[in-house]
Structures are given as C-alpha cells and as structure tokens.
Length: 331
Image (tube, rainbow, N blue to C red; front, top):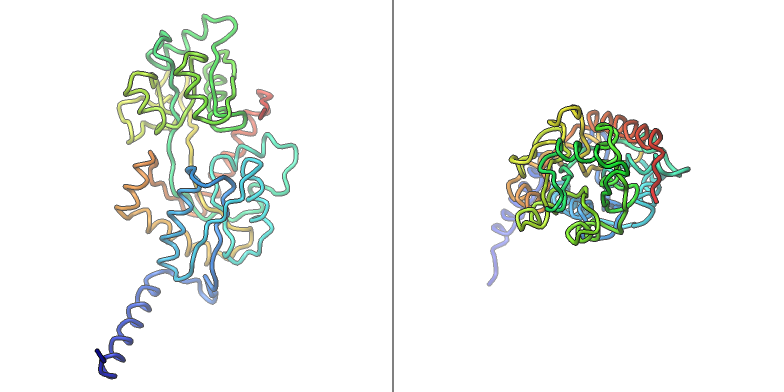
C-alpha cells in the first residue's frame, strides 16, 4: 500500500514535533550538549544485587527520557573500589557515572589506602532508594525486643555472638554501632554473604544477625526468625509494626540504613548534575517504578545533589569514627 507523499511528510513532521516536545520536557544543561553519546553507569558489584538492579532501572528510564542509551557496566571487586576509582579518574562530562551505596562511605575507613577520595573526587548526583536493616534473632533466644536483647547481653560475661554478611559490610558496622551505643559486648561472626548468615542463624549456629529487612520479614513470618527492630531512624513503611532501634531507651539517634545513589566525577558541570537529578526524581514518582522497588523491599528516596553531598560527608565521618574507636577490621 502506497502512502501519499503529503500524508507521509505530515506524519514525519508530527513525529519530529513529538520527539522535540519530549526532549524539551527534560531539563537540558545550558550550553552543554548532554548526553552527546551513550552514557556508562559503572557498578562495583556483580549483576543481580540491589545496586545493580537499581542501576538498570535508572538506566532504562534515563535513556528513554534523555535520548541516549544508558548502559550498566559491572566492574566488581574490592568492595566497589575498582569501579569507584575508574569513575573518579573519568572525564567530568557526565558520560561515565557511578551507581554506589553505603559501602562507598564505609570502605574508606577500613582501607589503608584508596586511589580516590570518597568525597573530593566525586560530584553527588542524588539518591534513588533506601531501606533499613533488621536486627533479628533465632526464636529460641529469650528476647522479644531490642531492650530485652540488651538486658540479656548484659548478663553474658563473654557477650553474645552475631552473624553478618561479612566484615566491612553495613550488616557488620550496623551491629557495632548498636553495641557501642548500648554499651554491651557482642562477638562478630562474619559469613560470606547475607544468605550464609541467615542460614547460620536459622540453623542455630549463631543467635543474632543484622540483615536487610526484605530478607528478614519472610523468615519472621515463617517463624524461623524473630525480627526485633529496624535500623532506620524511624519505622519503615515496609513493616510499620516493627519498632525502630532508635525507639529503644538509650539509642536515640541510632540509624544505619542501606541506600543506593549516583555519583559523577568531580568537576562535572552543575547543569549536567542537575539534569540527572531531575530525571531521577521524575522516575521515582512513577507508579510502575515504585512497585518494582517495593517488590525488592526498597523505598524511593530522592535527595538533591547538595543534600546527598552533605549526607556522604556526614556518613563517612560517622563510620570512620566508629571503626577507628572500636578498632574494627574488615576481615
């Protein structure tokens, strides 16, 4: 079937107008062609984890709205430091970005030397999601609240053992912050990953663990674990019936939540950073995106570049002090 030339030109004009309208709706950096080519988002961990999934979700939406492919590039190793080092040294034009998480502010305190500064070598773009850890225990442990766990620990001269997903992880330092603020003795038993730590506690090898809330809740509902508290500053909308650890007497101000955010190389133009931040905030308002996040026990949590920059500085200082004062080791 042949289409009349006039009608074809009209259709082409309408398509061009529609495309221009979509581009115009996205804030474009003044005087800067961005993105001028495909953008790579480096992830310092293997595919399938929370950071990787968040990166792929953002990449798809950013590519659709900004008109260039956003490609996820997994560079696993050294607790995310390999990918971070590459982004720190990249050209500050917005075409190489880093999707990172709480590990970005914890690793520097454990590492003797890193090829980058976690604050000075990056421009904060914004956060995407956050989610609390949970403190859970084996059902046989005679503690039904964080206050009872503290009281029980104070009766144990040698302390009570807890499992983590590994030394230097949030599951490790979150429990050490709890121990420090509560003034109790706990013994760290690191495992190779959160899955192994859960199996250990369910199997009765260790009585306590720190774990992502999304992993804790199914086991609690099945009666295999008892979730005592969440580590966010306030109760989580994912499980509002579970108290925040900060509600426990003596633990006001406690917080140790997971988060995922985007960084760019330092000196990236503010116009590019603001464009990316605006698009992230836009995608976090989409119902389908919120549903995907909820399915993984994540909550949308957008921050402005300034707020994210201040957050990174505060968290880096917080964990550095804890790790230094307690003389913690990653291994």
